[in-house]
Length: 349
Image 1 (cartoon, rainbow, N blue to C red):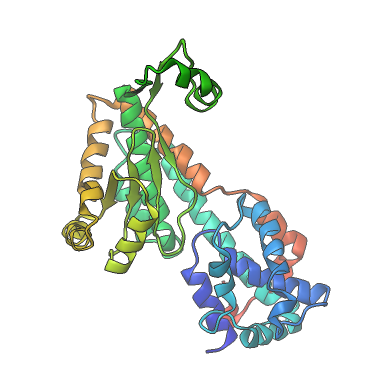
Image 2 (image 1 turned 180 degrees about the horizontal axis):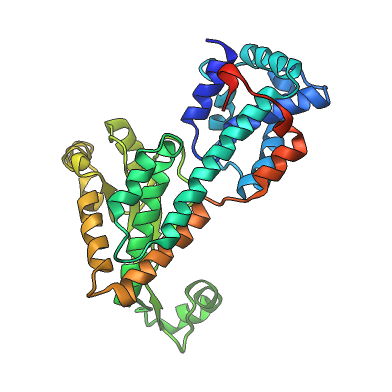
């Protein structure tokens, strides 16, 4: 495998924001313009290149990688871009005055343009025109977005669940049942600072809410959402193996787990969780058909004014948060002089 093939594999496997390709581009850029690093010597750029990557990704996509250090360092393993191939790529890049860098950033521009167009489509959607199946199919059927379909599923689930819970006006009641006055007095600071109560106010009522938990890792394991009414929600869009199920369940401490999955995965999930003796912690399994049915109901004439329109607003907000697109990519390409580089043959974008 040559360096161009390795680079394309990394780009094709990357999510929308292309963190790893950006890191490669910045190593090539600093090597070409400043020197001081040796592409064949991984220790000369392993750590500093993460800072270079973060600086550029914050500028171009509004966020930086939150993956584990182990996952980030996988970039330089033999099945990705090992020092030998990076050295080969850097020689080509230097000879052609930044052509490999330009190629990567034009690939990023392609992805950002796809996201921008999809967001414009979403902004124009109405309760009459929006369908969940069409929205998700745009990710599944577009090669540049397919790797980010898991985030699309998280967005549609979070927006839907939040909108319904809010419209139902679900409330959570908390109260202190212990009548020991001495205990109340001794722990009054804790009761006030942590529980939001006092000896004169032994109960509180709060609205039910859901919260998204960070960014899912590459293996799609772990927790996606938490609810203050006890549920821990995990969205699965891939085939659930026994290994992934066991690790996912181990990472979620809640005894009230809600799984959201594709219809075809429901029985597999039920079987695997039962075999692993974690079935008793599975509160419910929600399928993609359930999601589609609830979206149709929310957007129907019966509920669209209060529920459907707010659902679409929530979906737009979460999309913009998950996939921020900043218009600086064009200016960045010009600032670097990539627009003056002619990409030909296999490097043509």
